[in-house]
Length: 489
Image 1 (cartoon, rainbow, N blue to C red):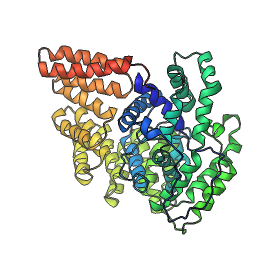
Image 2 (cartoon, helix red, strand yellow):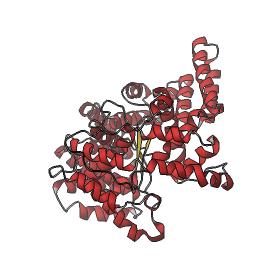
Image 3 (cartoon, rainbow, N blue to C red):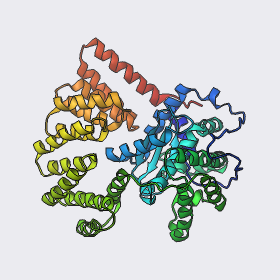
Image 4 (cartoon, rainbow, N blue to C red):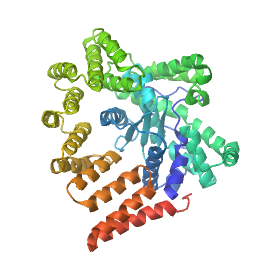
């Protein structure tokens, strides 16, 4: 598959930490950084249309390889935080796509067409929102400095099938079916290592613009060297279980000192964490912890009585989620009602309250709360999709369809939307559209063969409808070409 192979090659720049490069400090804090022209030809080789296709293929390969977060509130937060920083980057009008990988390991990466992934483990490792923002700023720097295009150009000399599969294994730390050890070793021995070294040379540039964008976006630029320092100290305690990122991409002292010196040029100011940051970390923390539910509840009960009111509220929110999970709906209801009434501008409390009612088998009350949330937070994708999901579970597809069509209009499509649309049209006895959207769902997950099967079923269901059949056949041909096409580069 042509764009799939090239997309995997582009993922070799998925490093957030790990460069021994030194750079001069002559740039002033309040001036935009002017990088030298090094004779890069990537704009000629990698067109905008090609990068878009690479970006789509990259996301499909990522979805097929690692689990992405299916919590839309978590993904919404990542998108909002990323957008806040990207607005002050060298490409403020570019559409970035930020998403969360459900993985406890510390990692983040940038892919083609401004796709940036952050591991849930990294979010939990950060101790402030500015630290998390520093990772976003660094990855945005990789995109705006065109490091990905240069990597694609360099990688174009590699043997496509073996190189693409091997790079996926190296970057994502996974096993690749169908690629023998000999093939992996042959590529790793030369070209793969050369490509990884090439990408490391850009870490300093990404740090440099990242510190500046961090400060411009209102975060603490000192958080970047602070986070680097904590990661470096952490390597002393991991022993043989050191994370792959820290093993292959260590944080040298020079990198910490250089980012620290650059950050010190900005005036110090106290930057408060947002409540969204605290609540998202709480959700991820509850999901990650392996404690029995009763022990988790006891710990959060204690935590909900300590610290500032914001910290107490975050712990109470976590406590309510744990109580809902333990089917103690009445206790969760009391906590969430209190949180919602005291914080009417916070959507997380209201959606948690609605879901608690739904799990307590009170769908009408849940839908009433979602209706209120929709009025209060009309631009929230999480509210929109959760509302649609509960409507479908309650057998009300006609009410859910406008919400899902609105999502397609306002946001970049994702598998969850196609999944829900497939269910909605199935419930309205429209099998053709149901099969079509199920095909898009599989395709977005990188399961092209399954997508083709769904379109073949859609074609049979379309019977003699010429317009529908032509539309389906055209999409089916695209899927077939994608599956059978030779490597692009």
